[in-house]
Image (cartoon, rainbow, N blue to C red):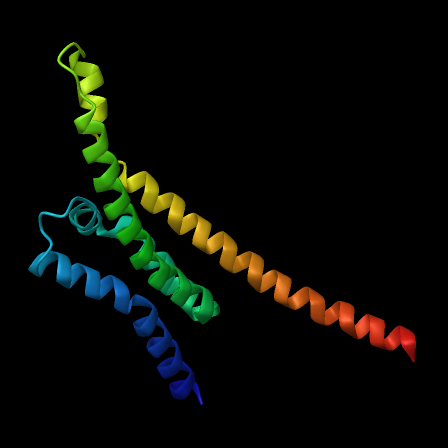
Length: 146
């Protein structure tokens, strides 16, 4: 019984960590010049893969959601960050000082990534909590009618 339990835990962790492995391999093979992907790989995904692996032991749905929404959040951060950066660079004028120019050259992808990831997780937890409450209310209503 213990081996089956251990195999289940290992399988859940492997499935939850699969997006991190895929992103790391794809970044090193094809996307070395993409800002957010390169930054994430260089910083070992901010330790998010460790947290996700530990959460997979206790709550597989949450860990899988974090892993796969991380991929979406990175994509959003990169695409929106590139768009915002290009717009900001196009608004640079010759009369701006060096500090203003440097601020407009910054890539906001990291901030977009972290906000999107936190938003996804908050929505997931809210939906998970909301789904539990109506069932209890319905049971109370049914019991009070009988």
